[in-house]
Each structure stands twice: as C-alpha cells, then as structure tokens.
Length: 372
Image (cartoon, rainbow, N blue to C red; front, side, top):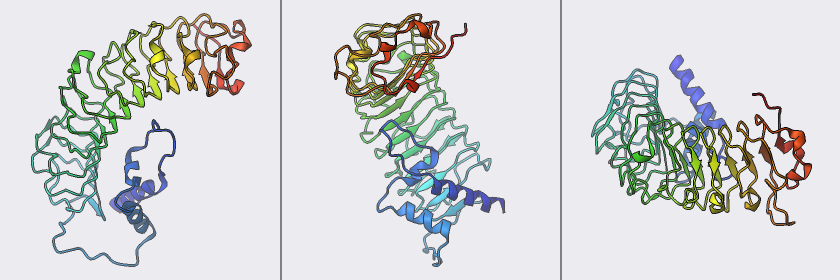
C-alpha cells in the first residue's frame, strides 16, 4: 500500500508543477524537468494518462527488463529512492527516461551501472554517500540533460560527463578543486549549481570553465575571498552569496556584461570600487545585503535597467539624494520596484523624498528601524 501511495504522490506533484514563464534566472524545482518538452511532449502525455487512468493495458515488449526489486517502474520513470541501496540496482528498464536514486547509501558509481540506458534524460543521485565515480560511468548516457548530484562526498568534478547535459547540481559535496577542462565538451550546459563546497578562489584552475555558455551559476557558501575572474562571460545570473568576499575591485566584473542578476549578499564587502558596476549594463537585480558597506555603491543611477537593490543589514549611515536615480529625465529605462535599506544605521527621516524619485511605488522602499 505504501509504495503505491508514494507513486501516486509523485505523479500528483509532477502534474501540479507547471513550466516557469519568468525571466531566465527563475529557477525550477527538483522534478520540474519532467515537465520540460521532449520529442513531442511525450512525458506530459504519459503523466496525464497515468494520473487519469488509461483504458489500454500496456503490453511489455519481450526485451523489456523487469523492475529492480523494491523500485517503482511506471512508463519511463523508475523510482528507487529511500531504499537504503548501497549500489545502483540492476535490471533498470532500457527505456527509462527518469531515474530517481536519491536518499540512499550508494558509495560508488561503477563502469556498467548505467549500461544500456541510452534514453535516460534525468538522473537524481541526491543525498547518497558517493565519493568515487568511474571515468566511464556516464558514457552510455548519450541523451541525459539533467544530473542531480548534490549532498554526496565528491571531491572533484566527475569525468566524461555527457555532452548533452543542460543542468547539473553538485552542491553540498567536498569539492576543493575544479581542474582545467573539467567541463570540456559541455557546450549545451546552461545551469550549474555548485554551492556549499569548500572551494577557494585558487581552487579554480585557469580554463576550468572553458567552453561553457552558462546562463546560471551558483557558487554560494564556499570559501571565496573575491569575485572569480574566469567564469563564463555568457552568464545571466551569478550567485556568490555566503562567501568571504572582502571587496569588489574595478576589473572584477568586467567579464560579465550579460548579467541580469548578481548575488553578493552575506559576504564581508566593505568597498565597491568606483566604476566596477559600469561593466553590468543589463543588470536588473543586485543583492548586496548583509555586508559591511558604509555607503550606497557609486554608479547605481547609471544602471538603466536596474529594478531591485538589496542593501539591508549593512553599516550605511547616509543616503544622498542622487544615490539611486539619475538627474536627467528619461535616462533610466525602468523604475525601481524594490529597494531595501532596513537594518542600517541611517535614519529614514534624514533621507530626502527626492532620493526615490525613480521608484515605481513608495511601498517598494523597505526602510525599517535600525537596531544595533
């Protein structure tokens, strides 16, 4: 009874999730990849048929493998999560598109663990004990696009990742080094989440990200003391929150002209050098909260598309009338819809109302009382 309920719950979750229509930096949930379009919307049709019930009984082909013991196999989805497995199970159906192995005790990926799974599209290995990956473990996975490898014991990026990969999440591992060419051949990769790894700036070898055309990269909760200088210049969203960054120097951001969102919150930033933000002409959202800034960074009035600025929980003690808005009419293409200044020692009554003349609505200004 319990396995059956678990399967129904899974199908309902997949059914309820809908594709995001927000800006490129809007992130999806774990199983949202099941909603991505495939050859002809096949996964959507299969999920809908399964939830509503199909009048036609599926007849397995003679070469179809049996479902691994304890797992749930339904159409092209194989769920083997929360079973206490210590290795990848055998007899995984060859037509599997989604394989869920999360929340087990798997310690190693062997060469033939995924043999024959050429149709696999998404693989979750989240929350296991994997510290060793055979160099050829992923070779059979010619069409895999989603790899979820977070909460394991990896110390390096696995080798020979499928060239078809679009999204990889390897946060909360033990990665201290990313070697040159670690992501070579992954020209279609769009998103990498690798936060909560104990990596320093020196851990990224020159050329570590060479060839990547990422939209999204997160290296939060690491050991960075500065903005990395060799990340892909295609980035639309970069998250470096919860690190140990001390300052933003003039050339730190010169490579990232396509950024829409930049996350630098929860660092130790005391200074943002004049002119450093001028390299980000398309920026829409800037997170600088929970740092040690004593003033609003210079250059914000010149950022024509900037809409959201988080500056709360700093040491800002004054805000000038031209801190956010340009003096000339029509110079800013979009109004601000969010400015946070609460938890700073500046008093709101000391800030002139004209300071926020390019804000869409007064409710967009968060300016609470400061408590030392």
